[in-house]
Image (cartoon, rainbow over all chains, first blue to last red; front, top):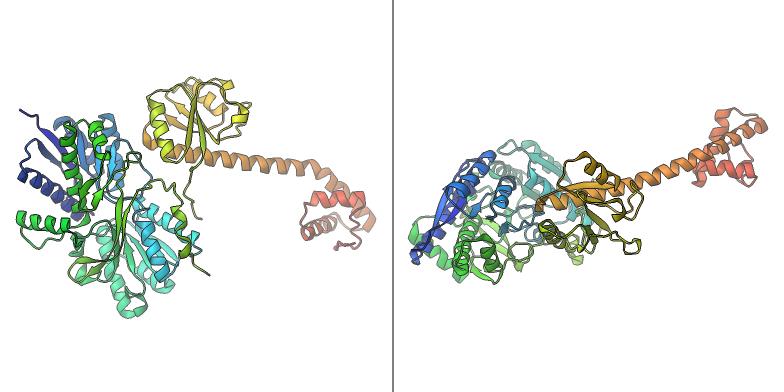
Length: 378
Length: 198
């Protein structure tokens, strides 16, 4: 008889990014369902919910590794949580499957990154926005490394094209008092707003920007868009009366993707759990991480992380993101760039797309100079 | 202030160590950063100087690095497992600007490079500044001599004499010491008090 292999699933289903955690968990669950439906029996999932408590992530990872015997953990949403878990994964020579967009500057041998770093989301986003709206943005962010680093990069990009950042403000996680920021934006009149807030702060900000647009058409989404890199379908229902409509988000997957793989995926999902659910990129990427992990374990004939990693980087894999190739040097997935515009149905319309871009986590390429044709003539 | 994203693409680094598991991880991360890595356990020859040096400080000896202790001409990162004060002191003497603890973890490497390079640049800039100030200090007696001559020849006070020299220096964008030297040598007549012209 085959020995059972357990994959650890580590997401917080509560807290400021709880809706993303719940979607990720569901995505993992659905991947498992697909695996079972196809006759798979060897792999099982073991769940742990740290409830957004940073210290509990280490406890959770320890439980999954020591008590459940997991060599693979799929999970964490924030960089802070990932950084907590990595030393333990390194120590036990496991593999962490991280599937959220993040701010880059990491390439750990014991981590596979399938969520994208700035050269796959922020830089193409700016290459889209600057020629259309100008190089005088306003930057807002959550007061932690994601917000800080994304805005620092944004500032560098803007500086390199000769533009000016008109303002940069931060809010603590879960802070929803956005009025002063919005008043400042109304005064500074930026060409667009980069929104690196997360969760309820972000929803409150979008609602206040909508009101500002109603008072002053210069701030309607078509004139001064608010662009994010981490907004999800599962969050749109939490935003008051369609306040996000017309605003933008960069991602590598949207529910509305019109590919055969995605349509089949959504049909299977409907059959599993009928309902109105839209698939978010975090659902899709958790699904992908778990599916790839299972597929690679089976293809390698072993759950040994080094063998699984070698298998995963040895070829490309069909996924919801298209054929996915993971770079054996950086352990990062090449990912397509999609620009979504929020529609009244709590979904995104894809308004711009680029084929899969290899990840450059340390920005060693010349990507920081943007493309010369985008240079702003002052 | 804009913090630029550090970029090491195209750099050459030498790791002074014997090859082991640590070296392997180090090589991987440095290559990811676009750095060409060379590993040796013998002194660096000055003619083959890399742009960055990483050295095993647990076992390193003075001759590994091609400079008198304390005056590094390249950024240095110490690889250190030991906590022995003597080894830490050795790393400091070689000019290490950052430490990567052993066993090496991937996340320790990039921050250490950025820190060591930044400290090296700050050190060079401080050295230039000190050399400049020392030069000016050496020339202070020349300024005093010029002030003394101006006060006696032009019947003005010391403050006024200093102002004459300073205004002239500013106008000609030269150090005051140099204007004073020109004046004493007769090549800068300072004919009109408060004006400099010829």
